[in-house]
Image: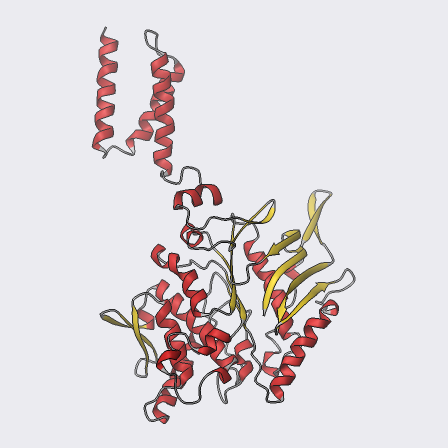
Length: 449
C-alpha cells in the first residue's frame, strides 16, 4: 500500500489541491489553517478504500468516507447575513500501489448525491477483494497497516469499548483494521494486549511469543534510554525500564507515554495483520532488533503533529526511528517543529501555502534558517522583547544624533520614552544598564551647557 499522489476537489478548505508524496516519509509544514490536517484527512479517505468492502463484520463501523463536514462551503450575502452552501462534487483522487500493482482510484460525493461513491475505484476494489479472497483461501498474503493518529492522540484515549473479537476472544487478523481512522490510541487495549502476552508467556513455560518480542524490540529502539519492558500484573499496566529507573506507564512523562503508545500500536497492528511473517517458536538473535514482520509489512500511517510532547532531542530522531523500525510503511506527518524539519532527508518536505504544496529542500540546515525561511519567523534568534528594544534603540539614537545643537523635538522625546520603556525589561542586564547611565550622563552634561 502506497500513495504517490492525491488530488482533491472541494474538500474542506480546498477548492482544488494536489499533493505529491515521498514513498517513505513526507512531512507537511505550514501556518495554522494552511490545510495540513485537511490533507491528512484526504489521505485517510483515499486509504479508506480498503474498508469499502470490509473482510469482517466487526469493521462495519470502521469505514472512512467523505464526511458531510468535509464538503467545502461557499457563501453569499443574502439580506442582512451571510449564508453558506455546499460546493459539489467533492472528490479525492489517488495514484499509488496496492498489493504490488500500480492503480488509480477516486472516491467522491457527486452533485446529486449525499454519500461517498466508489464508481471510479473499481480497479482498486477488485485488487483489494482479491487480497481478502486469497486470505480466505489460506494463502499467505501481506496486508498493510493503516492508521491515522490525530494531534490529540496522547491525551484523548478512546473510552468506547470495541466489539468482542476486535481485541478480545480468539485472535482475528482484521482486528488491526478496527477503528484505524479513529485518530486516537486505545491505551486500555494496549495494556490488555501486553496482559494477554504475559499470560501466554506463562502457558509457554516461560517463553515469550515471537510477536511480543518483536513489539518489545520496536518500543525499546524508539524510546530513548529504554532498556527493558514488561507487564506488571499487580499494577495492571506496562512497566518500562529506563536506564537506572523502573517506571510504570502511568508515571511516565507525556512524551514517553506518547512514544510508547504510538510505536506499540503500529507494531501490534503489524504483528496482528501479518502474523504469518513471525516464526512459530521464537525469534533468533539475528531477527532482532528488526523482525521480519516489520521489514515486510507495508502500510500507510498518518500522524498529525508528530512532535507533540517530544523534547527537541527526541524530535531530531523520531523520523529516523520510525523509518528504520518500519521500513516498508509510508509515513505522512505534519509538524511545526524546526527540529523535525532539520532531521529530514532530501525529498521529504512539503510546504503548504497559497501556492499549493511545494517540495522544499532543507535537510541539514540550521534551526535559524528553517525557522526564518520555511516557517516565516522574523529574526528567530531574538526574543520579541529583544527585537522591540533593538528597533527602539536604533530609532532613538538615530534621532538623537540628528538633533545635536538643536532643541529636542516631540519625535525625539517620544522615541526616548519608547526606548526607555523597552530597555526597562532588560534592567537586570549590567551592560545595558551601564550604557543607559552613560547616555543619561552625557545628555545631562549637554543640557547643563
